[in-house]
Image (cartoon, rainbow, N blue to C red):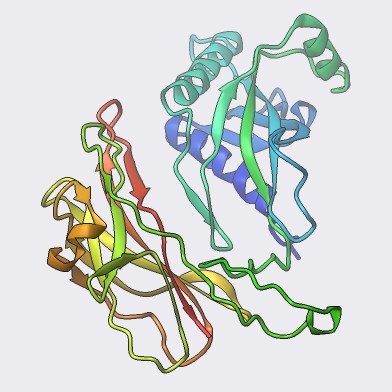
Length: 334
């Protein structure tokens, strides 16, 4: 019975599959393998070329504090890519080594960030960075491969690779308002909060739409006022109206994320297509703003919902599709 896959093995397999597609492996009689160079070296009677990925070093990401046991842990992998060509017609095995290695170099140079893959609900995009090796490090690597003769190789760093916990942290609710209360004795320190909580004020702002990656700005319009955080008792009627600022007429999507104590944060609710109505969002003009109605993703239990406005564009430099988000709008149901 096969071992269960892990996030590490899935990412490494996706890298091998990418090379297999770029090298047109089936048509060109190439095997793309994962393992040590010693295990990949073909026998003299083999008639298939081989490209081997040897993941030989695992390091932490190097940014920020270490992840908690229930958080995703990000790693960097060092990978030695070795070509094993075979004699073919009038082409020597050594020349085929260089043809294979040249194809690998070209593939990773043209596509340094691989296509996204989904692993247990987490989207992963691997970045491939060329990693020159000195003669001493090459000698150390190949000294561990027994009697296998050195073959042309290149090294890359693959990052960032997620190690997903079996029981991930759900994530807590967000703070939508703050307040304080002064009590006269210690006995009442655990009593429910009785002061007034004040949500953050919405200030006038203008979206700079000259950069291609401009992000929309949003607020709820409630009773002729702009708010970014709303707290309601379960069952309270509330029909959100959203003011979207940005390039006039530009298409945006309104997207919800929801939270409860059982399942944590996740996508929820309906996606609403709308358009920005001008670059300036001014609370003093809220009463006359053009808004978009949206429905709450739920209203029958306690929890939170966050609304974002998203826009997607293709980056001029390389045509890559990019999605940018607005500031969040929070609805707290208690």
